[in-house]
Image 1 (cartoon, rainbow, N blue to C red):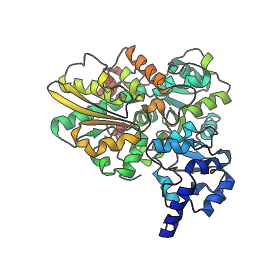
Image 2: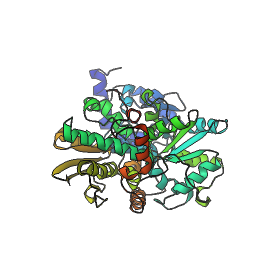
Image 3: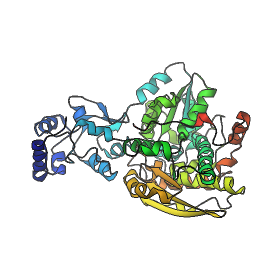
Image 4: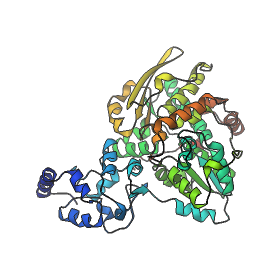
Length: 460
């Protein structure tokens, strides 16, 4: 329902007489406040009135009004992302404005009362675990440096081998998403090189962050067909390959991200991932099963593209996708390995970072967007760049909306991933022999594997 001039005038008057923080402190999200909000004709999460728990946005977030203490931290988090979906006095006209939610989940990280949570995935996974189905798990690169926090281990510690052990105790099969990241780099770097050498829309923009894809569909649909890479995310690439090997499995992806729940539900992904759990949900699952990750003996991951590169691991850091892609693009353009794997100009946590990287006789101009609030700083002038990375969450996946907010630091998680890259036997995705073997067996060249690509709609 669109507001008329009289209602707009009322809203402006309310804005001057009652601040957002004051309204929130009066338990604006509590049941009693819904009555007050309705009387004031405010759109206060209108879709959830009278419901004890309801999804809003597009299926990533769940709101539990009875738990809300009205602290306002969720509103501040949403505003800091430049989205303002939860802003009470922003002149929003209807509950349809909640569809502006991109599912980034930053509100769920800061809510102290669990009034805002990820959309429940645990119930379905528990049911699958109690069935006779084969359960196959994959763990995102960043999760391997975050999950230990929930069990008292230092932030950033690599607990990969303990995650494998936990899955085996659950009776499942464990893989790392890192190899999916290596496949992503092979396809995305090839896509970049093709456009640089033979023409094509530039800049190429990364596609592995689902929050960014949601934002682009809502605000820049023209980029979907022209500039955004057609590559699936590492999660979906690995899932497609998993479902080829384990045709009747129940596939669970443990991610640092709430928006991955939206990505997995897209029909174009063909149900390759049956359920996404956030890091927090996986921690609750282990607790419910009386599994203490901290005391488990290390175990090995199961064999399916078991080799992983350091480039795949740094996908969880802002700038990591860009750095991994350029390590391989350099090889594709010059026929020679990039001697220094680390590209320091791409590292940092500024909201926007730009750099010029020389590859042979060509200067590649790149931009890295750290946090969706900074996207509009780069996109209006994007034609000056060849390659752009966008991650919706500040810090990249290390600060994802599905991660714990109080048990660790984003920088410690990032440092853990960089450390894992430094000690990796291979540091460039194209050196992954499992990946090389797959292309050889399929008689494919990087950039031509349809199973690894997706055609997004231009609207969400």
